[in-house]
Amino acid sequence: MPLWTCETCGAQFPDSGRPPASCPICEDERQFVNWEGQTFLTREALAERHRVTWRDDLGLTGLGLEPSFAIGQRALLVPLSEGCMMWDCVPLATPEAIAHVRVLGGLKAIAISHPHYYGALADWSEAFGGVPVYLHADDGQWVTRSHPSIMHWTGDQHRISDDVLLLRTGGHFAGAAMLHWARGAAGKGVLLTGDIAQVTMDRRFVSFMYSYPNYMPLNAAAVRRIAAAVEPLAFDRIYGAWWGRNIASGAKAAFAASVARYIAAIA
Image: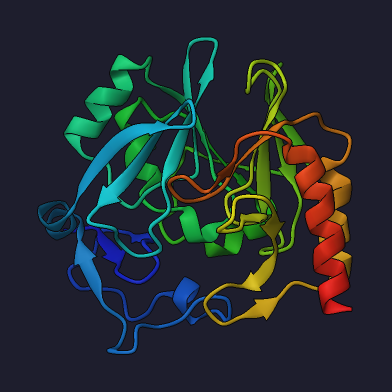
């Protein structure tokens, strides 16, 4: 029985003799159904058409699909004391990419910002012995392929190690999360935001949306809550969701300026 992957959002679905009838993530108002109709690829067909590549992205190893697929995000590997933590996920795990991650110390855990980036989380977990996959419980309804490795954390914070902290900020999704890495950027601190706080194209600010493809802005109260969640943390760098979409330095001041600018713009 094949596994199926949505061609529009990259979510993976369970073994089945036929493609799913629909993708609930795409049918949600934050995403969209392909104009030609909902389509799915088997895991094998996806691997025939795409490969997972890796390269440095501002000091962290990133993993992404080439050619780009679905939403096109890249995952990042955050070093822990004995291996790596994968932040966000991609829709495919290939033997070559798995072997490369093993060279870097392997995966000790996976954490994902929100349902649009769940991808092939179960495949990546299984490749490293069933490592835990941290998803916020508030987004549990969006899991398209259940797996025993999934750990639904609750509350506003979940500590992975002495220098890695998950934050529930909400906004884009109820359980939307960011990752704070205290030792990153030479000890100045790093915030990995996915697109919960989207690094803008000039890489000087971040911005906020409820739906990116459908142009639905986030309300001021939600943006203020995100700002309050990150305000106590020290960070000098922000990593966004796509290759090169990062703020290399001065990120905390840029974040605060971005919040003020955004709220003024929607007022």
